[in-house]
Image (cartoon, rainbow, N blue to C red):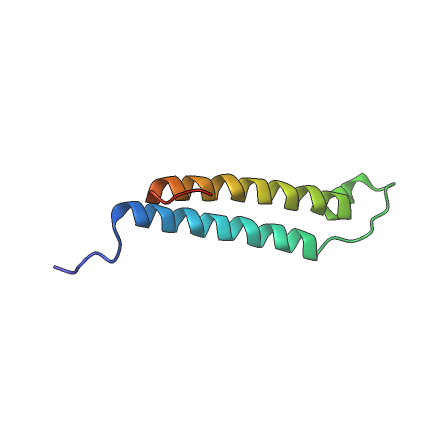
Length: 79
């Protein structure tokens, strides 16, 4: 019988970290693709610099909370 690579709580932490990485990659893509847009065209708001700034800020806050949960799951100290 193959040996498990990780304890169950560490596997959950790995899954959470993978989700965090995906979220940050999405935020990076939004920021990378941001541009000056014509404010007369409301269909382009999600391509604007202000949108990208808000999206990135939200992703960072979500990442902070997700990482706190990971720390709690693995029993590490949060400084």
